[in-house]
Length: 65
Image 1: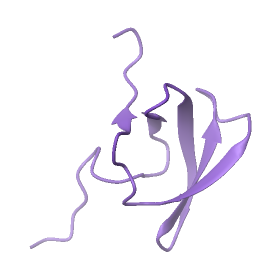
Image 2 (image 1 turned 90 degrees about the vertical axis):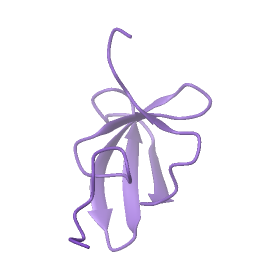
Image 3 (image 1 turned 30 degrees about the vertical axis):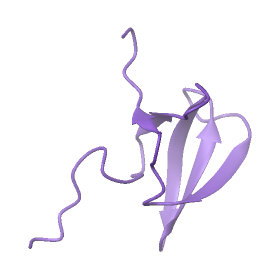
Image 4 (image 1 turned 135 degrees about the horizontal axis):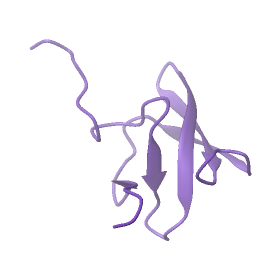
């Protein structure tokens, strides 16, 4: 096993995700096993912390789909 993380497998810096409730979050920082997400497409609204592997129900955001 290479230990390489595929896109959409966990939160990674720079990615934009959509929560199960439809809100958009941008991943701005990953420290250890915690990711810091900021609400909004550009990550300029409220802040939330989640485990990097806690992506159940979340999906990578694709604009215009």
